[in-house]
Image (tube, rainbow, N blue to C red):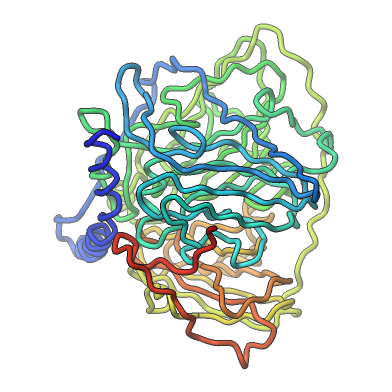
Length: 525
């Protein structure tokens, strides 16, 4: 292994405490800025509109449906390792990836199937793999308690028991999530329906059903990743990568194409639209399809959120997908320091001269069973302020909330700052009951696991914790701006049979590795 690569890996392992101090300083400086002081950590405004040549064919992550063993379990194998990727020809960047140098394969399983995933850590530092948006037992969740040591393989298993949708996987090592994702560890996990032809939705992977993992990165003069340009939200890059491709174009051969958009960035929020302001159909969000297509000309996604859109193209045209000045709900000058004024060309669609006819899109999809607020057994309040939730920072041994299994709860979430945060809940897909007392907009009317929390706004969420009781292993809730999560803006909850007897403190096995001081329960063999 080259000396420079070893040094890069060790720097990643040591960066947690440095980043925590930097983010905490950003909070104090940003608050000072509101009172008129000009000394605040800020990212410059980036505008690449009309400047991208779109000279590289979009890479499509390989589709991996695994293999079905004699026990009927669909098995997958992932190996996290360091590699070198050329985002610019002739310039090698040290990166991390699953089964390759950058990102990972698109895993796919059918709803109702049992799955087992063998995750080998080929890195020189501990990591974890979290199945973002998945309903599964806490010990299989891949959060900060399921640490995979170097050279160890972790093999979680569960049954796919939720709506067909677009999920993703990424590291969740406490204090190091941002750096591990920035290095490239991420991939999609598709939950497929038994009937792929349903509702006229495009479903041929890589043909008319396209994964679109959007990330921003900043490079040093030698072509290496850096996170030195930061706002309050975290690292903000000036180069957009889609599926690891810079300046990408997509050859479109069908009248309709479905784009599975994932905001895979660690801090940036995107407001996706097309350069010709065309309308498209938003058909699905984090946890599944909407009840009907929502015709719109834009969709905004904060880090971790997903959206499935269906776009109609005409022969020979070349529309450009862009992100234009996302509405962050922050004061104008502060928003501008955090990507709110940025304009970015993302990807060009190149329609063929002759297009294959597409099936008509259904006017209605399956009905979403709405949870009744009167069925809620509990109501909880979560106040996001600074880098804390309810005045507390993440402690690995502390259970912040105890939930009884097979109950419905309402969680009211408010961002008390004038700065950006988001809220992600592990294990469940929730429904948004209201936004500041009003009915949720169409993009929040389906199943969600992550929402952007606008400053001062109260989001009323309802969810059911239907199974998987385990008093000793917690799930997480946290801000999904990964620098905030790393700095402690995260809490833990357990799902239990009897809340009155459940422990509020959990045992954390000690570890000798001082590069990951927050690590907990393993699962390797």
